[in-house]
Image 1 (cartoon, one colour):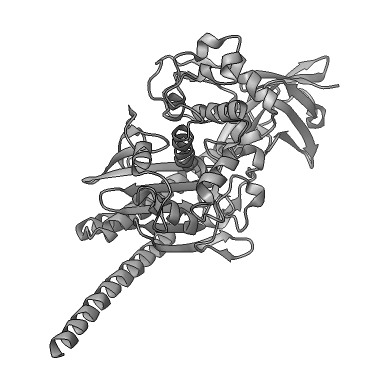
Image 2: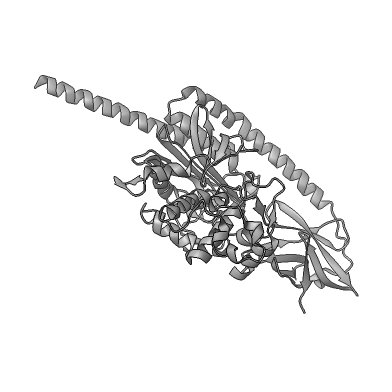
Length: 496
């Protein structure tokens, strides 16, 4: 009896220590994230999820998802997750292939609409798998503007642009990361199967995993974090560019939160199991992050990127294999990753355009904290104390210089500002509407709208339809009248 009692006491002590250790990790992580927000105060809000193969270990939210209304982030706060959508669509492609609805190794010219194109030769020798692994060897300059930004398009417009404006890349069928392959995959399943990637993901992924708040329709999402801009905390404002259902696309078109993403990560770490039920085979899950093509992740030194699978990047974090994808859009940044051998996954969402260094620092700290790599935590804390403030100051300095340069510019217009107003049409980009109000000109193309500012060339105006991406529009004048504008190398003719 005494031995049994002693055994129970020992077990309780061990369990208690494990619980204290877990609580300590969560407390340390929470403190670290709070310190990050203090060191980088332009970040409004952060949401995080940590998972293993059995469960979501931890979710939380920090800061605010709506500054104006003082709404605080929590694990139910929804974020637009941008290109991490590709990890979901890659899984969908594998599921459709497994069901025999498509064949990933089949050429896309075996499917609609490509088999009906007059210039079918351009699309030959490209497989469905090539589309989702970024090695199709073709591209198109128009689709991202329409699908990701303006939303001013019809299905017929998209099909015509794919057929008439697609071109071969100089490098041929080499890895070239872009959204284009996922756009084509969306078109293929829509035209060939009569199905939508949105509905298929809901049926085959969100519903089985009980991801109740994940959706491809921004109009259906609640408690969505607002996107913010500015490198000065006191000047934070909501970005005018807002997502619409028309700009939620297969390469970057999902809204989700920490609670739902935790389930998604756990599903991958368990290799197809959810709530003790095998939903898909281990082999199918592993195929989504198996190497299909070598792909160094240039420009982002977070993980040592080596390859690309079906919607996942493959690389190294310290000595560990890491599967990951990042996503960025005006006012948002998302980090989604997992270490398959270490049975640990992390997701971080941020509602600011400058989220990349913060999200990735939090993720790396989380991995080292939960894996017990205490020596590495000092490195992350040093980054927090020194590099983050330095990075912010550098961005602020650049912003001040940029604003000063802009303020020195003067209008070079041959007409009064109100004489430039009108509807200007281009068959590829849609309609550009130029208006005038309170001595300012504005331009609007679909979902995009911006104030026009001076540019030192005759009859030109600078615009930022996409935040922090300035371009110049040139008005063509005849007989003291604006008859068209040149934007992005395209001519928009004024409508009578």
